[in-house]
Length: 291
Picture 1 (tube, rainbow, N blue to C red):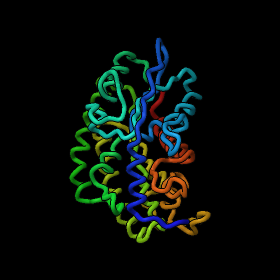
Picture 2 (cartoon, helix red, strand yellow):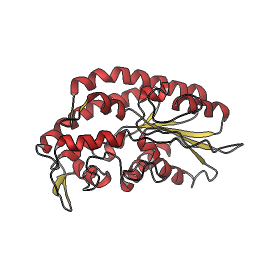
Picture 3 (cartoon, rainbow, N blue to C red):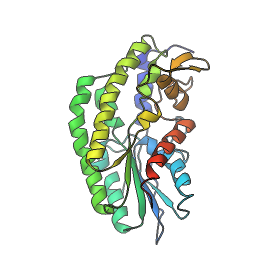
């Protein structure tokens, strides 16, 4: 595999996180039961070279839950590049919402369909971290910046979830996710990549812990995608074709995202397999919450 500079990979990463996207229009009407999905690029199944797709974790989860709720419709409001701030205010959002912001659109939908939303999922926060706390010349996450970011991030998460709860009612399950760490892919991909991956993972753990705390404090259920990807596990190893023996956390990022790929090196988005794994993580949490 061609060795890349961490700066080149990081540049690819930030570009891919912030590509434009268009939110899906509302499709539900009448007595249809809906699944309302909010979030960033992961929630719209973003893929490098393809843009938004219908094969993301939201789509997989919808198809799975439809086996239990056949009339379930899907309302996707996610937006590539969305942060907690742009989700609330609409400012600097890549997407246009008639209601003003992604959160405003979600609240409007909930208020217009009382008792007709089966559950809500949300992934948000990674772009807050990437925008503020990654040095894109090196690919290194800044721990002090991350620690400083978390209280403000948690305040905005509370605002988002309180608004959804007020509009949807206390009975509507809200499930939010932690993030896998795509920067683990630096391991063996760039000079000094092993040390960089370890250092970034330690900061990523702080970020995920703060994210989960914010979600739980606002009474959301947490789908621990980080655990599914075994983000903390450098001890166990597996063989990856073309890469040799790797720690299992690195292997899962390389196998389940585009970060280690030759064509799209540095792209942090999940691939088809990764999106399926995320969907299953949500599905397991939902089984105890749905009627």
